[in-house]
Image: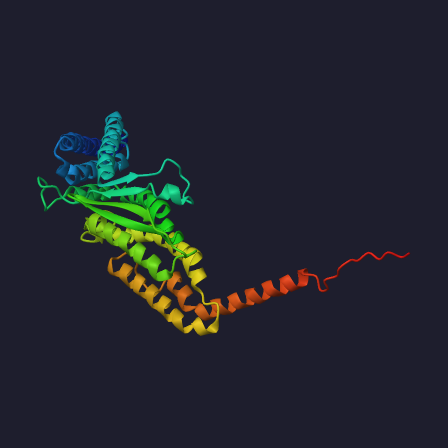
Length: 353
């Protein structure tokens, strides 16, 4: 009886071991299939990178699927194989190669010619700035899949779209938008080209020390409309949200630039437009209306979303700003009186003989 019990016990222990071994064989076979599939996707990626410019979306899609597949394989317990590490390195190389190609294409779409000095406060330097937008399809390019849409969609798939737009937004703010707010003599020149436009500056004589709000809004709108037409009006599918959702490029850029540009408008423009006397308060309604129209136009192009921003709130709060300005004027007058001499005396010398 004891012998039978011992044999039964050993057999019971052996069965799970056999089952585990069979499971392991099955998992290894599945792993081999997955690894082969992953290798195939990487090879397809290499192939797609050699295709024409219109293959960027397909190539990025293959790369993203391969990365997802590798991530799943690595998550399986016990499968820390050297082959997976090698495939991971290969995918990293392919992604960097892909980003290099996309970066080169992006530089062709938005070409900056910047002054040698990074002195944003110099009007002379700013006048040397040019932005070439070359995003319109060429004669031999398929209108259904232009290179602009292909590049932006591929960047979105790889999660690099915001990085590219963030760098672009900083150049846009420092070399175009903020100078247009700051300098009343600075104006935009638009030169049409076969595949886009060239944006450059000119300086005209003016007696104004600070630009008026309507002038600033008009200049900014010209630039933002050009960007919307030639660069941002492209539907891009997001890989980070539910399928079918679109990334609105104007919204992305708007989020990146709005806080800084609205602060610049307030500091370099609206502050100086506050009336100096109560008789001019009614005329300020024109400034409020111009600010509202500016924001509504930006919302129409999707640069802005939601309710009134700090810019419009500042303009509407003109009475408080006017009162504050008058108080400051009184304080300045009082300070001048306190520091001036009350009596003007003249010393005279008397000769006593």
